[in-house]
Image (cartoon, rainbow, N blue to C red; front, side, top):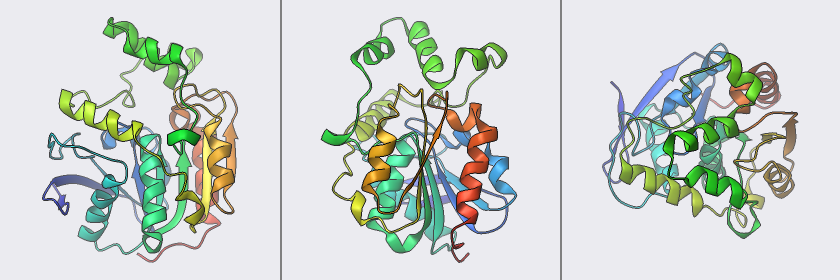
Length: 264
């Protein structure tokens, strides 16, 4: 299995599929690369898709130390360097979109085009989920909390015909300390001041019915990043990219096709 080594020595398991200009796919909080499994083939036909398991998840090392969305950028760069890729398009969803914001702001030369899905600028300017949603996810009955999460990710109609298992609900092998570290990293994210410095062509995508990461964050990001485009997917919840795949994937592919491909 291929591994990259982060600057602090953490081993990161990565995956490469497809062929073409490189496209880095960054998944949500407490998830490994399997998050992208249901839609990865949509991008493999035109791009060399690169994923990796965040530290704490999947086959990567799981140190019990503070994580941050900005810190994850060093892990992304370690994977790109291991593959000899100077520049790549980046598509980040949920917490992966938070990581992608820092990557584009801090390393503009490494990012071709940028897609930010179901994500937030965080901090004082970000729109947080409601207290009712927070309480429902934190309830002592873990089975009930799990059902709440499924319904925040997908519509009832879709769940009725797709009983699972659902790969977006978190890495089942995630140790408790890594879960806490991922939650803290996502909660501490605040990229507001850095967003205007992003120079990559940017598309912001969000489901209109997303309550896990409220849809009101999408226009905030699009308005803050110079020249960013906004695409709202009507009726979609947090996992818009899977349930509304037939709308979301073509929208992202069209956007990427309209940008200058990065050198391989």
